[in-house]
Length: 234
Image (tube, rainbow, N blue to C red; front, side):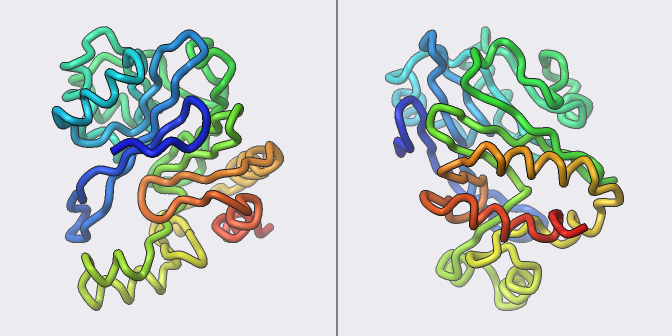
């Protein structure tokens, strides 16, 4: 249920959710902070077994939405851990006005991250922004939808023929790992985002975890330069 990436960082895969008619897998990341508190990124559907496994790691204190799409299960987790702080960019906070969030996340990580999680605000698209993260002790970069890396086996098992054609055309598959085409096309100002991805690459991450698709355990620099080649081009 929980896959340990490195010391104090785990991922968990959840069931597929429907996104405009396409089954999308779900994934979350859990980080244990230096004081033992748990930081949970993009919470997946909460089950009794998952709750038990999470409790075995520590107490959930932070629930993080990286963009305005990744919010579906925040309220369920907050109901179980009512003292947990909710975090997200302004776009998530606006969308989920029913929940009480901390101040909007931007470029600078809050002190609550205790110096082990850095963050990178990707903006310039008229459609959506996203906060990417870096767990610095393990060198793990964490993306929601800025990189989608579906395997052909997953697509063949879950997507229709015409949907697979689009996935391959858009490059949201292994071997490319791009952001969806419609999002890339909506990026009217790439200057800030280009500086942001270069700053992240400059931190030399060793792993790349994304919400949708096959995560990267080695050669992270090669993967990131390929997956963000559309953004790195002047």
